[in-house]
Image 1 (spheres, rainbow, N blue to C red):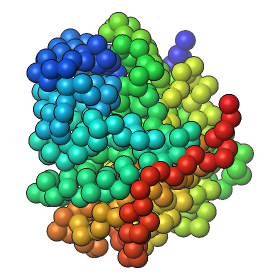
Image 2 (cartoon, helix red, strand yellow):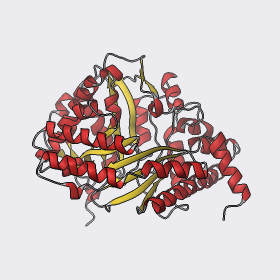
Image 3 (cartoon, rainbow, N blue to C red):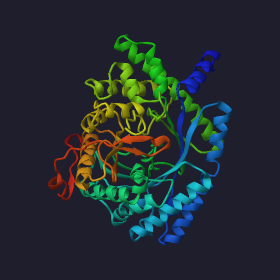
Image 4 (cartoon, helix red, strand yellow):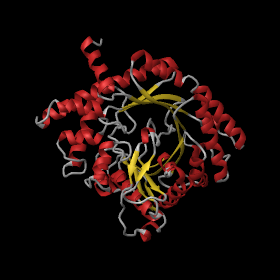
Length: 454
C-alpha cells in the first residue's frame, strides 16, 4: 500500500521536479502483414496498426487524468520494415510508400511517433534492406511521425562497414531534403550497435522479431527528481550519494511500473519492460548534465565527467531493478545535446566537445545523441564518427547509438532549432582530418575475440 507520505512525495516530484512518464509505446508485430503485393502489404499494415492501437491514446489519457501522472508521448513501434517489405518492395520507392502508410496509420490513431522503418544489417544487407536504407531520406522528408533506425553492428557479428559508408551519404541526403527545417529529418534517424528489441524511445524503437504480437513498453524519465534529491546530500561521501540515487530511481521506476501495469490491463496487451533511461527535456531543471554538476562538476565535460556518469547510470539501474521485475530497452542516461539545457550550456562554455561526449558514451548505454554538426561535413566523416561509436558498443557488449544532424547552411557558432521535446542545439565542430581511405574499404569489421562464448 502507498501511504500518505509517499503519495505526497510523488505529487511533489510531478509538480515541482519534472517527473513524467516519457512514453507508453505499443509494440506491434507486422509479420502477419507480409505480402508480395505492395498495395496489399500497405493495406494489411494500416489495418493491423489501426486495430491494435485504436485505444492506445485514449487509455494513456485516462491514466494520466486518473493518477495525475504526466505521460508525455504515446508511441508505436513495429517490426523492422526491412523484413516486412522484402517480398513486396523491389525498389526504394516501394519502401517510401510503406513509410507513408505508417504515417497515415499513426495519424489515424493519434500517436506522437511511430518507429520501425528499420533495417537490422549488422553482418550484411539484403537487397531489400539496402533499398529501405536508400529510401530513408525521402521517407523521413515526406512523413511527419515515422522514425527510422539501422542496426549496423553487434558484439556477436562485428560491424557492417558497407552499411556505415552508405549511411554517411544517407544522413547528408536526409539533411538536404529537410534543410528548410534545420535538417530535422536527421533527428528521426538513429544508427545502432547491439540495438535492443524492446526499446520504447524514439527514434530508435522497433518491435523485435523475438517479441509477441503486441506488447506495452514504458519509458520513465526524472532527471529533475534525481537532481533535487542530490541537493539534500551535498558534500556527503560516495556511499550516501549512491544510496540517494538508488532510492530516487526506485521511486521513479515504481511510477512507471504503475502506468505500465494499468495500460497493459486496460488495453488487454501484455506488459513488456520498463526502460530506466533518464531522459531530459529542454525544460530548465530537467537535465542529466545538471545532475553531473550537482555531483560536483563545474560543467558536464570537466575532468571526472565520465566517472560521474558511470556512477549515475549504475545507481539508476540498481534502484530501478528493485522496482520492476521486467527492465529492458536502453536503460541508460540520455546525453543529447539538443534536448538537455545543461548539455547545451556545457558546449557553449567550451567544456564539452565530441571527443568527450564519445568517452561518456562508453558508460551511458545510449550514445552520441542529437548532435548538430556543420552542414558541409563530409559523408565519410559522418561514417567515421558512426564507426567509432559502433566500435565502443561492439567491444563493450553494450548498446550504442548515433543521431547526427548535419545542419545544411549552418556552421560552428550557429544554432539549430527543432522545437518541442527536441529543443535546440549549438552546431558542434568535428575533427577536420580525413578518414576517407578507411571508410572506403569494403566489407566488415569482425567480431571481437570475447564474442566467442558458445
